[in-house]
Image 1 (spheres, helix red, strand yellow):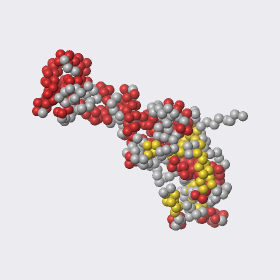
Image 2: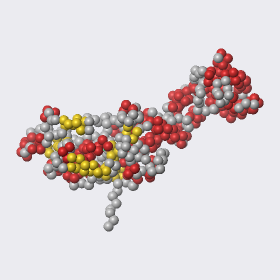
Image 3: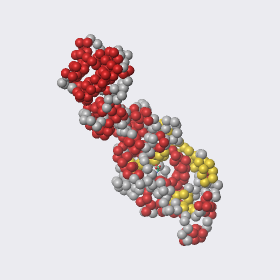
Image 4: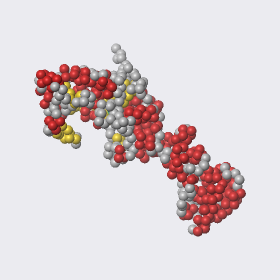
Amino acid sequence: MKEAVVKIRTRYAPSPTGKMHVGNLRSALYEFLIAKHEGGSFMLRIEDTDQERFVEGATEIIYRTLEKTGLKHDEGPDKDGGYGPYVQSERMKTGIYMKYARELIDKGEAYYCFCDKERLASLKTEVVEGKEITIYDKHCLSLSQEEIEANLAAGKPFVIRQNNPSEGTTTFHDELYGDITVENAELDDMILIKSDGYPTYNFANVVDDHTMNITHVVRGNEYLSSSPKYVRLYDAFGWKIPVYVHLPLITDENHKKLSKRSGHSSFEDLMEQGFVAEAVINYIALLGWSPEDNREMFTLEELIREFDYHRISKSPAVFDIVKLRWMNGEYIKAMDFKVFYRMAEPFLKKALTKSFDLRKIAAMVKTRIEVLPDIMEMVSFFEELPEYDTDMYTHKKMKTDKASSLEVLWEVLPLLEKQADYSNDGLYQMLVHYVEEKGCKNGYVMWPIRTAVSGRQMTPAGATEIMEILGRDETLRRIRKGIEMLENA
Ligand code: GLU
């Protein structure tokens, strides 16, 4: 018999705790791609049960980022798909977590714990994977039913803990890491319901993923070590365990975990630094995943087609900002001019206050920048002739030196004074004519002119294009200045 086809359902489950970290965005992207690749559904769930870590405005950041990156969710707090509420604090109000916690208590898989801070602080700590943790000693597991009821009736604060066995092992499967087996004695009786009544992430993620029919869970591998405890919860309820995909760590250039210190660890940082959302998404897709042919440039549509989570690598992915800059430059080159201009205009306006043809300047820089703010440095010479050294007039390949440059500038000055047509074409024809008469190479003439009008070794355009932008008066002023500098050199 044919097995019923289960529609893939993935979820992105961010906690609204601040900026959108690159690692979180990668989880969202992979969840989105896994669902869309199979025609499934991608859901947004806000995990706000940790009230202490909640940051005002962080939920808006999540929506804005999904919108900007094109990771459109099919269901979420703003789009009901029949599995709501989609915000954990609202789910809590429905009593769902408490109901399931009680079910576990009835099954002997969880228990009330009334231990106070002092008692917990006196428990011995152990170092597990470099972290100090306190393994709860199951003190409250031995309370009698009467004691529990008396405590509850007296309003004594409590938490609900998972009851893990002290013997045996638990095995679970991760799509990338394979089967992982742990000793049950190592599993802490983690808290499921906190004293404020909120569920912990550890409990809520299981209850929600099950009740919201999630088929694939994709998340950072910092959750790998807790997964046996989640698996025990699924088993205790008799629920089907979702497919787990734990993603490799993202590191900085120094192979340390990518953190705020790098200055580019969040989507907002990258946007502020002038990156293009499409390029960021393309780059992030490659942080752990690669297609068979090692191709690098992908639109979101192409990623949906090509993405196969079985090809995610377990080794840490290095976030290489140099590579991202390159990729961003490629996106800018390929971008529609109108779209580019809209993005470039604020930077052009910041750098250039005089009345220049900004569209022409934008066209010059479009193929030469990596990120948008590069524009400002690149075009600032239009606004103000920078201080420069006359050594710049000497160029081996162009066969120019200070004396030849002075001669050329002297000769072209009257031609430029006479010239009425200051368009790029008009200027070019006039100068090429002069080059022919002189019987030299183009560069022999264009190099000193470009140097004089820009004061730069590198410019986003040739001499005549620059002069067209500067206009007659400013061009003549700069040529005269060059002559004066060369005479005094
Ligand atoms: N709320 C968790 C986080 O933001 C989600 C982890 C998960 O995807 O299960 O890290």
